[in-house]
Image 1 (tube, rainbow, N blue to C red):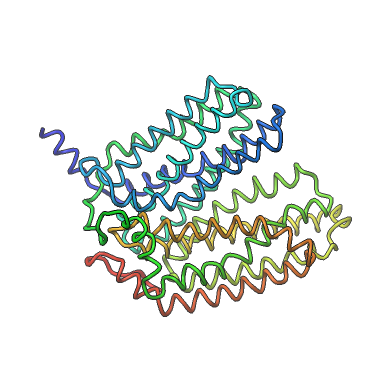
Image 2 (image 1 turned 45 degrees about the horizontal axis):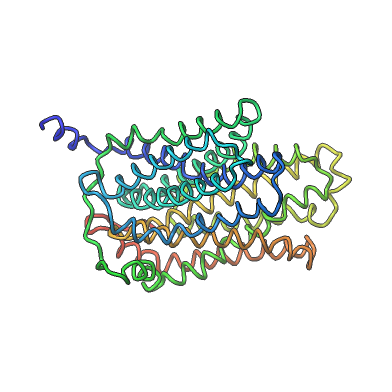
Length: 435
């Protein structure tokens, strides 16, 4: 009994908290990137038809709707294990077991069973991501949330590489079973940290259980003054410009006669490394200058970077790409757009944590982040269509203008609404973050 009590009284230091959150964020998007990026390639190589592959994309609804699980994650938990910690432990064990259960299956020959297991993994991973958001809000004081937002965006970039290109390389050289075993092992890494991490006690929940409890939990955040404007106006204005532009960058590079390997190197490797560095730097900047100033700086920088795509969009960078200087300039601009988008996302994640109330932390955070996911999906589907109607040049120019307008709108909203909302969300003994 004394040993158990001593374990419960292990201090939650900043280093332990940062290490745990970094490990959890590192595995956050492994399942998504494996199933929607790597598995599709594997199945297509095995001869699976496009109609069957459409079923894989259809299951993306299970992932996109993960915010609907947030009220359940906020409401139910095991206090002895820690409210969000119990969800993280359970969902990690389920995900690891499900990934291991795929090893003896043939991905093409047992496709219905693979898709069934995939659904289980996506639901468990969605609940896992929601619980991470709730735990981060509970653990972090406002002054540390910029660093946490940086860790999240940086680790997600690495997570996507592990689940997509990393798993494809393992599959190519070592086979299906080894690839899944390694992914399961990586996903299990945070378990050792979770088992020895004492979660702070849960505050009182602001809504009562019942049939309408889940809907009330999802709707209570946007009902707060200024919150609906943040979710439905500021976030779309702030992100849509760069999302639409990023959707057409690969096709612009193809039209500029870039090879697929060159595109993969620039957007995958160089872009991923730059995004990771930008996320970490953005966390420091956000903590130093405040949320509103960070939104303005990153938004205006995105607008300027998008203007750098105009030569490529106008067709003046096609045959001229044989020149080293033109190729380097285009590479720098493409990487900068990707890095600055990550920096801007870091500021958005930080504010989302600020505005999340401790009693409904998972729900509040997940609802805000869900807007980003829906916007990105919409941009991916409409960006190319708009480029076909308008052409690349008008689309990129409009995206740059939208990014600048979004930066100004976000900064204005932060000056008037963020301090009051953050103060209302924070516990009584925490001061609101600086704007």
